[in-house]
Image (cartoon, rainbow over all chains, first blue to last red):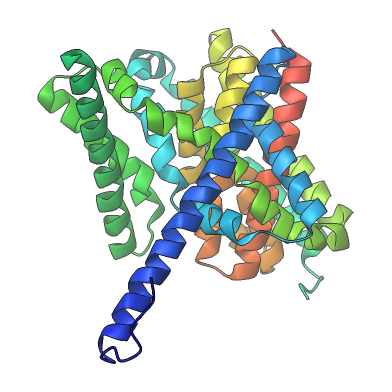
Amino acid sequence: MTIPSKEPITSLPFTKRVRSKLIITAQFLLGLVILVSIFLLSDFIIKYFELSFPPALLGIGMLLLVLLVLRRVPKVVAASTAPLLRHMVVFFIPAMVGIIGYFSLILAFPVALFCAIIGTTVLSLFITSWLSNKLLGGQSHD
Amino acid sequence: MTDSVSDILLALIWIGVSVGAYILSLKLYQKCHYHPLLHPLVGSTIGIIALLFLVDLDYQVYQQHVSFIAFMLGPVTVALAVPLYNQLHVLLRMGWRVIVPILVGGTIAPLLAWLSIYAFETPLNLQMTMLVKSITTPLAMGTAESIGGSASLAAVFVIVTGIIGAIFAPWVFKLTSNQSHMAQGVALGTVAHAVGTSRAVTTSEVCAAFATLAVCLNGIVTAIVLPLLFSS
């Protein structure tokens, strides 16, 4: 399809907008297919060799290796990873709703869980913050 | 035939409801200046649980309907390789200065949590699940399952840990007189993973970058080490 040369000026930005939206969507979907393929491949490898660690982790390693070989992040990959990571929370929702099944377990050990989740988290944050400030506090970023 | 059609329809409806709940919670979170207690995951979970009670649907049936969302968590986690790749040069330049606090924090956080629930004589699967609480949710879920914990429970612990970390971070940074954005990012990412990182994003780009680095490194190291130690 060719764009008529005598097209009204006002319609140009619109067609351009639609076209760039289509390109972005296509890149996003292609990137998604790449991510799904990497994940399925690592899931297959983990199951085939009966390894016991998360398939997503192997997937991170494989994608990192590809990026290191290419020495850059391909546009299609960036086009889908950026929005996916920004809204990653959506993918936790099904698991988080599963908390309903653990209400009785949580209510059975309220003090233990309170200490473990609130107390030790603050303590760990304190220690990590102190240590990282000792090591990185004097350094400049660039 | 009609069964599978209605299955697909129900799946689409519940996926739509979940995404809708997320969008609404995100809007609320942004309106309230990113208050950690209003993290979108908190809002959308409460919203969906309330809706399930309202329409009297079992949560396991809901989980079946939205299994596509749960599946996509894997591929989305793979995407973490991109920020890791982008920060690799910083990691190499800062070297041990950035690796040591991440490893130390990544070790003491689960250890302290485990010790405190071990002291209360809780069931083993609860103890195993607690070990993964400071790593990012997708890795935590897979790791918890491979060491004999529960994926769902891991997700809950991880998110709550992140929210607690994000709430107390400003106070802890003041106490440790930590004013370096790099060091703050490392602490947030190591202990409070992705939720901490979303907090770091509001501080500065450097802070967010170091938090992302810490999330990736801590998650990867923990996910490799724990199954080796506790493989069932």
